[in-house]
Image 1 (cartoon, rainbow, N blue to C red):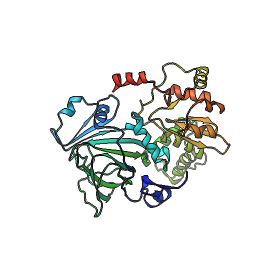
Image 2 (image 1 turned 180 degrees about the vertical axis):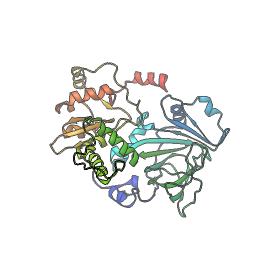
Image 3 (image 1 turned 45 degrees about the vertical axis):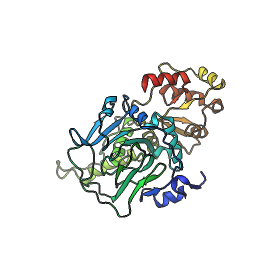
Image 4 (image 1 turned 90 degrees about the vertical axis):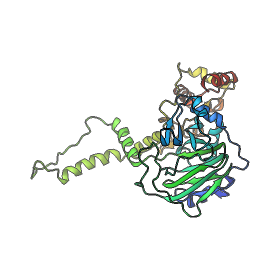
Length: 399
């Protein structure tokens, strides 16, 4: 990718942004999206919040049950009619999984690895709407989609910073504004925040929509547990603690240094496998955000049927929300990682599948492409495009 100046980064190149700001300090970008028009309106966002299986929250600063009341969706439409005129926020997670125009925004962030992107959350708030001062443990780009929102930053805070007790939000007990770190964002403006920075956003206008592009960052405890589970699944029962070099103990109740050294060697020798680490990492970084996200085919796809459809001009789509990445190997082969699984294939096929290139008949010229496409179709990572009638049916039955 050419390292050109990007309007999205305020005229900086990707190299400059990564060197000077990424995971180091915030960056305000005025006009990151010139003449920006929101890809979703408040009514559509509220409609998503009424759907089963879509993660949504409603935060009321002055709720009937107390301050900072949080309710979780799906919601009934009458809930929104009963809300006050100010001081509440609706948050809907993974909107890119459902709205193609929202998903398209992710392609603007390919100056970062695709597998680091998590999802796009969109929030709506009338005047005064907020979720309180808080800290996120991941990078985030906050794009103002409509209306105006005032952002205040409070600098980095410690992991053990006190939070308000008794509510379903991690609001900081103390928030001190950093001098010079207060801005009002208008449509097309964007704010980048690295992990650990306290921030507080408050809507200043009707129909305030904010797009949050978040990133995946597994914690150390999550990574260690996940990798140990992955490795453990493939180990034989005979791979155990052993002590053929043991000498008579001075005290049979003591855990001596030699015993600890043997256990340490067992663990480290088992986990120190770069090839297995790559296989685990590819799977964990492409896992679907939600376990029930994939919709497997009810009947298996025949290879001949798929080939015929593609030769007749059909194209296959990557399912919204599905995640693709690949790893090249020293033997000239590759692993394509898709939605938490790995598939052996050629490097060129892996690159194409993990890109935004069309999936059409041209792909069939690569060895094994037909079988790979069938597998990904049947597990729901790929899908045939909906025709207009199907879109109409979806709107009526599912929206």
